[in-house]
Image (cartoon, rainbow, N blue to C red; front, side, top):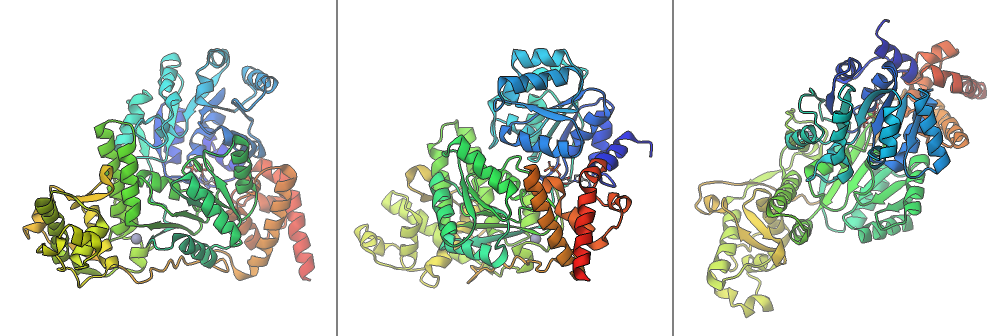
Length: 606
Ligand code: ADP
Ligand code: ZN
């Protein structure tokens, strides 16, 4: 075993082999080269800079925007016997001073720094006086101005290339459309660096999309039927909805906590900590929550409002199942979501191109919800990656029936057209559907719409069906929603081809009750039945140990490691050390206690 990187992987991290692109990336950086790394959440990005930092002389400087999580990252490394520290605004003067001394004396393998801190004179001066192994720029998409996580401080980071041209820089992100990638490379002066693009597929996450009716009830049912007592995240669009939903879930016996930017810093930190350290907490949050929360056993991510973009959605759902075990992404959406999002765009600051771009993203998201083919295919296509139908999303598991919706589409489009022609006005969905269904409401009569040739031509479909047709036409860009005008509907360039009968339209049927059917594996199929009880005992041991050490349980050992221990029942430290995820330091720290726990368990059986 001569390769020092492999040696570190095995001895420090306790893993047998590199995953996917890890080896190539690590070789590149160890040799002093730059790299741009695109890997999905849970793909294993951290090792790509941690190992080179350990192999190269000097300290690896990790730029991370997530002050609240630096502590956990450093704790996890410390547990592995890696010398790590951080510098950020949460520390007092003495603590920071101590860390600076450690760095200057060459005592640190890794140093995490917030970007605004890094670019201060004091920090740059300190860096100039020590030895730097590499710069890692984590969450590199924060440099993208049009992205959802833009951080202005990131724009200053290209300075590192000027100031330290000889030090390798590695930028990492889980957000990876071709555009974002280009923007990252340009803004971080990494245009000459090779790109390492991993597969973005996360096969263990099952994707499910349902139509919203009583969304809180639907959510509760999803949780109680599939994941009661397990850890999950529920994303909502607004603070108010976060509060209401968390209250509701609590009242129904779910251990829910709230997280949004309106809470005090302390409250947010406290809730985040509970989410990380306690078992089975459901975090109800705005998208302010989640970046860098690398809790491996999040079993589900639910969205009860339509996300603003596929990119954001994929990143959020990627927070489920980092441990590689089955997990579910569940999304509930409705037409109202589209109108509301479009309105937010219209009311937002920003130039026309930016607004257009956002509108396109919302439409792409709606397209994902309305698709009749594999959802994962569509998601990965968005990142430029091809895939066979996955077999693990609702459309694969339960293919939706389709019907020829050409005539229905023509009716709807001509209703919009006639109203505009003859009444000089655009109307909203409810009104148009009333006209199609021949419902002479006060409002309909007031405009004398009864005289229109389209009045009542759509009586064969229910309101629900018409809403579904409409959503699909919006998703196909055949109808556009005018957000600045209370969600009125208008035709698009492409509508004409349908009206003229040049294009036919295949639509999905609305399903009576879309079942979630996230196949829970109870009892756990990844574990032989006879190891089940032992595994539970080991988890209890882990919880106690984590409490005593004041770290999250997964920092001690992850589930996969405990499962292997429960199945193999090692009797000696040497046998224990062969298990994946048990490196030298953890063996030393916990090996004896773990064996004692196993021993006790077996004694009790006799
Ligand atoms: P990311 O930062 O890309 O979201 P992480 O670096 O947190 O992902 O890695 C996800 C999980 O996979 C972690 O629990 C990590 O320890 C594990 N992991 C990473 N690389 C390997 C490997 N080569 N073998 C086994 N497990 C790995
Ligand atoms: Zn699929």
